[in-house]
Picture 1 (cartoon, rainbow, N blue to C red):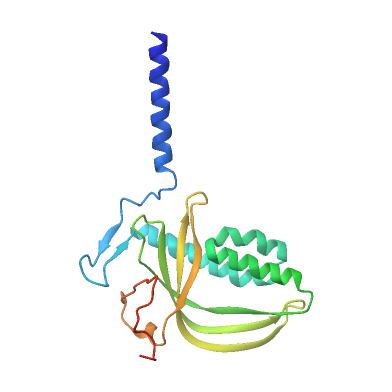
Picture 2 (spheres, rainbow, N blue to C red):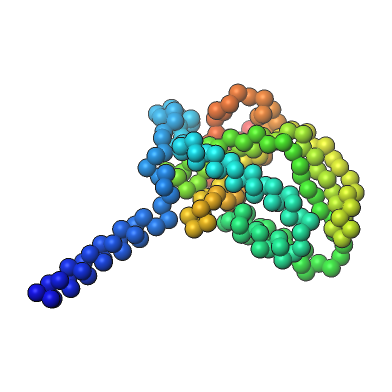
Length: 212
């Protein structure tokens, strides 16, 4: 009787382990994604529930605010904070820049971009772990500071613009992080109506740009 009980317990433990492993890393809203503009070429996309959209927007805003404010922090504080808000290519790029600053002993200047943000969350991946953020920026101002004295040297008006970032959900930290910069959108994008068409391509079409 005992061997049978032990065997059953082993089977139950194995089942529990399999279930826990299969669910590991899966976002809670993976089965709540909805298809928007289904069946419409170049317009169909996956969208998450409203509370997820709000969290993406909030975490993105926090990351952008940290990038602005961290420029004046110490090197160690910047290194420690980078992994909280960035991941993937964005984190590697930030770490590379910080390493360059660390090695350089010459005085250098810092550029801090400040602007008003209107954020639109789009194009979730099928597993719900990634999405795009379209950040329509107005009243953009680039302030240049001397790093050592933290004295502002110059401010340049950059006008309005729109940029796209890819976000990735960190299941351990339970927050969205900037994974990579996608592109800056063409001038005039911010003047169009909402729900404009967005398509993320891994390979550019043969006819693209002004040369064709």
